[in-house]
Image 1 (cartoon, rainbow, N blue to C red):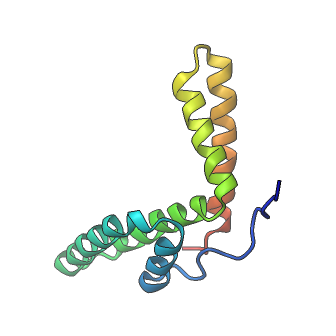
Image 2: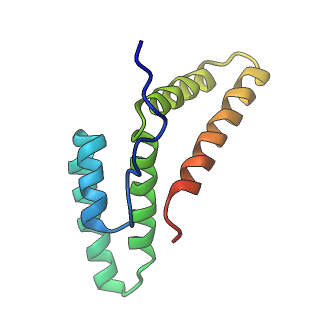
Length: 115
């Protein structure tokens, strides 16, 4: 069995539209339509109200999406943990899986460029 490294290269350099779009295309091409639709909506909203916060939130959300899916092993582990939480029959099992999910999300957040 060949084990892939947890990180071969950063999935996203700066959180910019074009870089992020290319990263989404690389890690989850089926999500590109959703990315484009949301990007258009956010840009339109920003141009109407002049508030850049929705754009920053969009970039962070999709940066996290790419970060979580950039390593297939990590993405698969996250999916298994989410399933474990949803199917847990006792609080201890659910809590243990949720704590591991939190660690994965925290690590992904730390790897993103600063806002």
